[in-house]
Image (cartoon, rainbow over all chains, first blue to last red; front, top):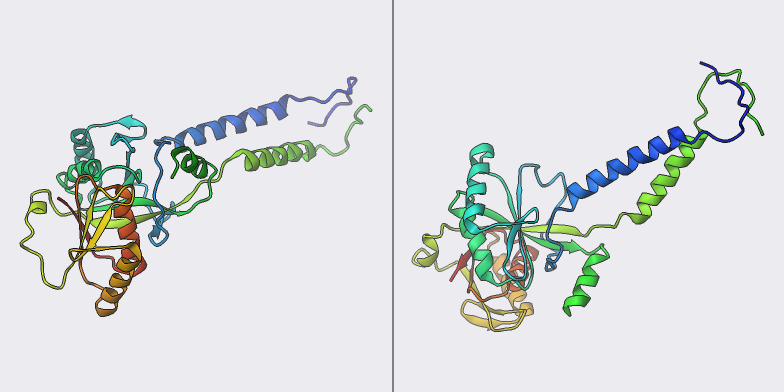
Length: 150
Length: 136
């Protein structure tokens, strides 16, 4: 279908706007998916740990957040140790052995970390990983450090 | 300037490419960069075992982490209070003797998580990977 000569010299914006909206929706959806975590957690440096890359960590893993106050959460939902235990048990039945990543604030007392670790081991997962920062690149971390006077 | 009829029915891609470039630049600028994370793997013995310390062998290395040392906690290497640099030195010696030496870390309930991560990082630095964490 060849284009017809236009009487009106104004540019047709419709397809352009369509593309822009499509892209905005795509990015909004993917960003929301990636940001489900407790933003208040400040991780300790761990330069010598195994660098976490999407390839290194299988999709079948679990991440448990522990805030400074000892609040335990997954994907921003606060959970009790019993609920963690139940979830780990369910996943183990489905996936078998899988990695558990504990993302705990550096000022968290070991008491809270212990609860999470015990919930995991009693559900049958003995190998746990602690998350640390290999290299600081974000703008948020220095801001958080200043706020908390670390 | 009105458009002329085109001989060629192919779609003019130029404005679309312009828009796409604009968007790419916009997102590159606005999307924040994320930190690069690492993970430190540990073995966690069963809760029932954590109270019994009978199974310790002589060649194990025991590191105890206690609270009341502020945010850094207090670290004991084989019952002796040490600084982080001293712990690094001790673990380097341990690694030189035997890389597979089991490291046992015992944490008190009031110890800060920072101390545990620091100790684990020092273990990893010295390529000591068989680390178990107990709670006291």
